[in-house]
Image (cartoon, rainbow, N blue to C red):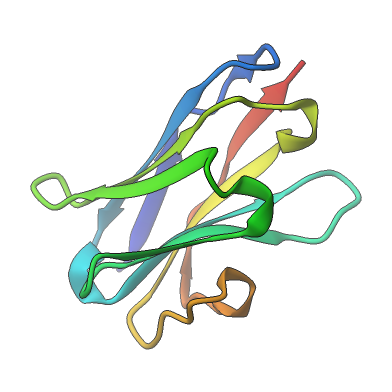
Length: 124
């Protein structure tokens, strides 16, 4: 049984930073691909970042390049998303996702098999 549990969402002021965590159980994050998506009210879900763990390659949506960083900790089987220079338009529910099958270099093409429940980030 795969579980992805996000944490770290919070209310933060513009320009602030947060680090989101995704603790995986029943799934080895080195299986291929882990990623982060977000969905704002009234908007479609957007792929934000992905990490091809087998090669250590990272992929980002253009909107967050240079601002967000995805990383992994193998010892704790956890994936992180560091969010810097946050803007009000970054307000959304952020979801962790994983896929053992493929990890396309364009994040929006990722179709994860497993999803977390989400953590709320509010920038105001």
